[in-house]
Length: 151
Image (cartoon, rainbow, N blue to C red; front, side, top):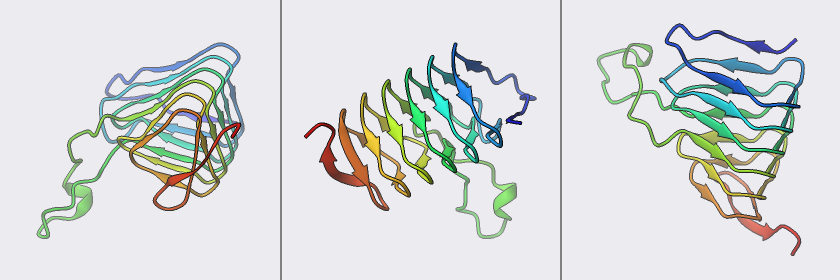
């Protein structure tokens, strides 16, 4: 019951072996030319939405809880005389990168330019737009370091 849309621009959606994509997950090509690559043994739970935007790379063994949003794109908003929907998108901040063995709690939002280093944990409800250190625990809006995994 996942909904993986085809891209009209040729976006690659590459899903590795033993990936679990739960019901009501949406992968939507929108906002850029980036590809989506999901590594082996990753689990993506219900209600999660992945926009392709400027690209999403998810490593191996990543766990993404329910109702997360991965949005590697930014609407242009500078022109007051044009509707936002007519302005297109701002330049890329690099897409989203999630390295191996990361955990995203429910309701996490990752924005364009988010880089989650190996083994990090993102607390439920956090909003991430920059780099998260390896094996660190981040939470809050905006996300900040609140601990270390195994520490």
